[in-house]
Length: 97
Image 1 (spheres, rainbow, N blue to C red):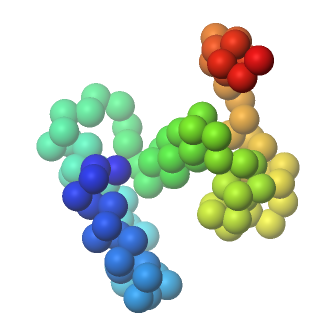
Image 2: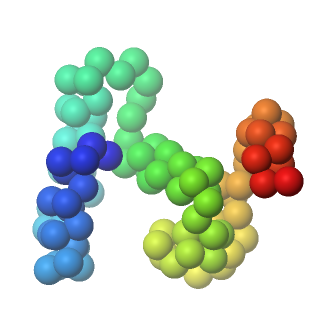
Image 3: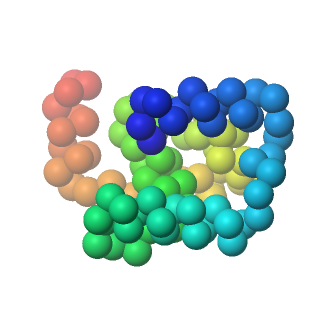
């Protein structure tokens, strides 16, 4: 998410609990943005959510906090995002040990 769009979205959700558009509209919007950015992979809102979750964990957000943000009822559902590469695990271990 770019630095200029984040405050707009945060401000919107500060006032409203929903985006105010349908699921298909969001899917089409994400697809259009991905096409303009010339992203060759299939980009969906779910891919964005997954990318956000993995990035949050890589930046040190606790699993419990991410669970709340994502709205998961069970921590096991959130733990799916813990699937990290061996290189990432080794890097983190070296940084923190």
